[in-house]
Length: 432
Image (cartoon, rainbow, N blue to C red; front, side):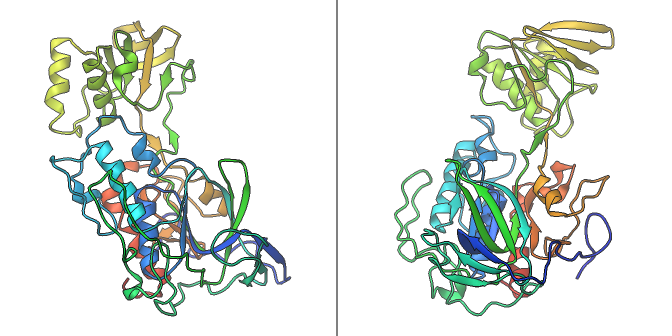
């Protein structure tokens, strides 16, 4: 195994093990529980499905909710092929895909592979099973994995194990499909945004020994317990916003995300930040008729702003149609203005809308609660980059969580491959 990433100390034993047999009732059993239905989580579910494993994907919001939360008229920095997943082509008529293009594409991919996505079902925690726990599916359970049947004992091997063959089928994989790969044979892939007519395969039962209990809550408040052999945490970028920590930051007209500029038409709006998100917000607000002031603590716009956007924002600042306060910081927010500390002193800038475009930190709370160590300096969970497995056997990470505090190191275009590493580990090192 290659050197572990994150805090040193090597692998850890699964906490909570007990020799005493426990009769554990669950609502269902799966092979892999993927937490987060973003592009990297979906890619992981596809990869483990191709390895013949049954996967379920949870998200506390909608499918690809991070992409859904992007500005309404946003264009991606990456080209379409770099954010495609599962080998499904992402064809667009323009150079860069839009937010709308991406939403339609990921819906199509999820339907194409018949992924079992639990939207608006929040995972509250996961914990290891005692090694001798007897796991039983509750009577009346309506998900695959059995109906009032004995599933198996907890614990099991701590390695990847080996697959018993392709006859099992995984999430979105018809039983008997060649090498466990591919969508239902009667699928039809239309232009993105259209209806997808498929005959989904029956949900294949889980085949791996359960090692974890996943506790989740549905949109209607129902508490559910799922037994899983492995966990993939892919909770994405939009965990906790970077905050200014100034008075007034929680006022209702203050937001850490930007949708579109219409709500600020003919109003004074302040945008804080100097990166891509701040620049896109400032330009969209300007085009929607807002009176925009950009506040940035640096001396100029960040140099990594998209090259086709940089001339636009610098031109608007130069001609005064977007006001700018560089080398400045917002130190307080009130109901109709912000206080900006500039090199010349404090200034009250009118602001009926305030957009704090300061970026986010990935939410690693589930990993911390499970006992996965985090590097105190980088925030990177201790894991093996060759397999994406954490120091707790069977707990994997995917996507931006692998970057820790520096969320700009992992994007869809490189995080989408984490699922292949995870599937290979669960397949005992075989290529999948």
